[in-house]
Length: 512
Image 1 (cartoon, helix red, strand yellow):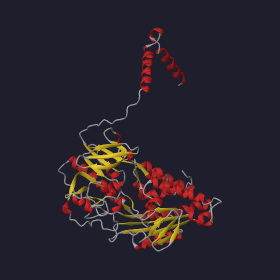
Image 2 (cartoon, rainbow, N blue to C red):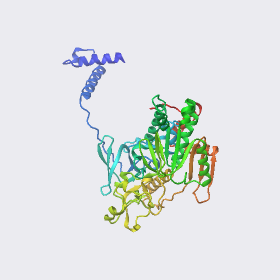
Image 3 (cartoon, rainbow, N blue to C red):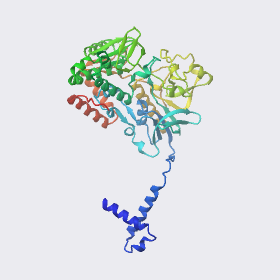
Image 4 (cartoon, rainbow, N blue to C red):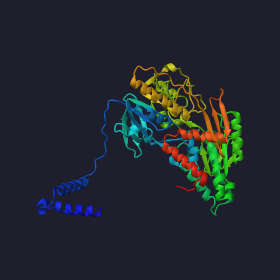
């Protein structure tokens, strides 16, 4: 390499002469070509690089724009036939988060990359020049011009035109307007949230042991508050208690004994499960050291949670998992909304709009704070005859609901909707007269890990004949089911290796 660079410098020096060919009569044609190429390269490097601009590649296929990379968007993106569509994905996240295993990443059972499925691995055609992924957030939609206005992380704005648009931007954690929640509590919906929780846990564990801490302050810093008794809250509490009992006790048994995990639920723990399973989960969590409290958080300060019962709970870290609500982007769209701020759709996932535009301002929430979560989603006070389909606009997942039959914001709902819409688009692309049946959701059941190598499984719909099991066998089935549902072989291997190393060596306590 050094000899090559020396030759290059020597030849360039001769190239600066008036006529290097006369000074080097024995210079071969290859040398002359090499010198000319080197000179041109140096000249090109001195020219300012022109700003990048994408040249539209027209293939004659329909342009499908997908907003989001959640469960619904990822399934649609994976199943769409790119022989009939050019696809553009717009999202600030270039991966799908496998949310059922996200709680495991909070305590180091799994690495963060194990639960992040790259969108590049979901659709091989994304590598083709006519398909794109843009790291940006959608700002608004113009249905008349069929244009989506976007903004990237640096604040630069651009527009994307479409033939078909699918809004699958998901939801955000609902704070119910409770003071202090948004500022002081950790949500648990993304890898960035899991990273923040993990770092906060490790920091509090370490800082509580410094000599200048009072006993009261030490006890507060070692207290973890989990608000919400649904599957996410229960699984996090179970993983955390498992982390304390198996790993922290080996490091410092005295300090680990002072750790306190409190789970607060206003109604029923794991309300979608049968009563025997709920009772089993409550008893198991109690034996693992999780304190169960029934009540509602009225206010959250930097160090205390004030409950509706009048009780005040000091805490070092609070994790909020009490349901979801609409994002500001969803409520700002020029579509009809449900009473809870979700995009109104019909049975074919088409977005709806008011026939009378004046009724939009009167009935639809314009921002997340306008949403009343206690109101029934189909209760708008209007008949379905006032709605019409928005041309070429569809919605999937948590951000939308059919007012005639609203479905819960679940991963399996979103995934089934994505699968349905991909099948619909593919069928219509092959045969425009194809008969399309309305979407029909099939509830597969519910699963939840409760720590201590125990889990709950309930297959089928509640209220109907179904199968349920609990204990260690359920835990093995829970792991097997989610392992097979991961997006690709790479992530499955990551998870298997993480589970193995955690079992042998314990969880890592490094703070990043």
